[in-house]
Length: 128
Image (spheres, rainbow, N blue to C red):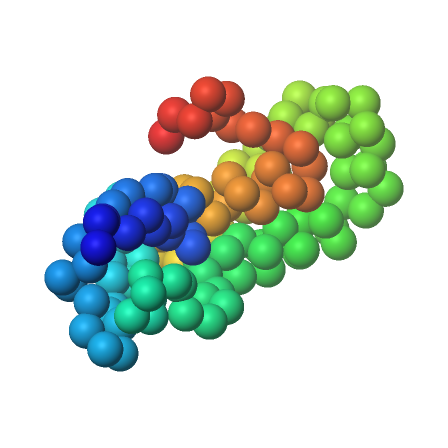
């Protein structure tokens, strides 16, 4: 069997896994990019709906941000002025995310929430 193509369910980094590392029950895998651990079955398929705890932290912080700003946020997003109008508040959200998630909380979860909620891509072209 050739190497199995995997994609981390957290940061979406793709890599190859030698099938010799899989037992009958699969294996626990640690992503070489973000260090997230997840399970794969004996066929190399990611097992279960692995939730990203950092994504939940980012979601909670940004939920509070949305509630606090209300209609002003909706207008700023529609006019593509989110950073111009609310940059300091967004930085405070980032600080709160890092406070709640820990000093080593990865940036990808926060960036993904920004992208999904507000259409903001902080690193166009995939840079980190």
